Amino acid sequence: MKLAIAAAFAFACLITAADAHGPTRQKLIESVDINKPVEQVWAIVKDFDGLAKWLPIISSSQATKGNEVGSLRTLVLKAAGEPKLEEELLSYDAAAHTYHYEMKDHDVKILPVQNYTSWLTVKDDGKGGSHVEWKGAYYRGDQRNDPPPELNDDAANAAVKGIYRAGLDNLKTIAEGK
Image (tube, rainbow, N blue to C red; front, side):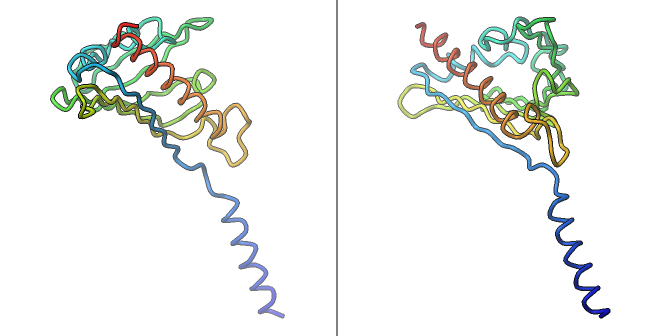
């Protein structure tokens, strides 16, 4: 009898442990090929405080220290109430045409993600053009086991993908002069 009770208890613990896992870190990579040289594309995206120049949802972007690591940029969104997001520059490599940043605390109703970090890189495509990659890693907006639909993995992925696609598609249009 004791063995049966111990086995039932062990099984219950396994089920509880399986149900108690938290969210999985989401990763997303979006890219675009642009028929312009790397230096020309990098000139558009290189400024940490220049996001409003090519990301359509941003009305303004200001950074405290430009492209210096530790710079904080405040993004004002083109939305009712002009919500703001703050991001910190973690690394910047002009020679490699890349930078890495993270989002600071924000209202997940504005962007349904937490612990968001991102990398933006411009590479030579080997044909005289550029390959731009925007990569992000983040958790959904609500890290409980049963998040509401607007804060789950699907919502987080859709929001980040929408931002990346809008930015990269607009970047291509601007860079190629279309």
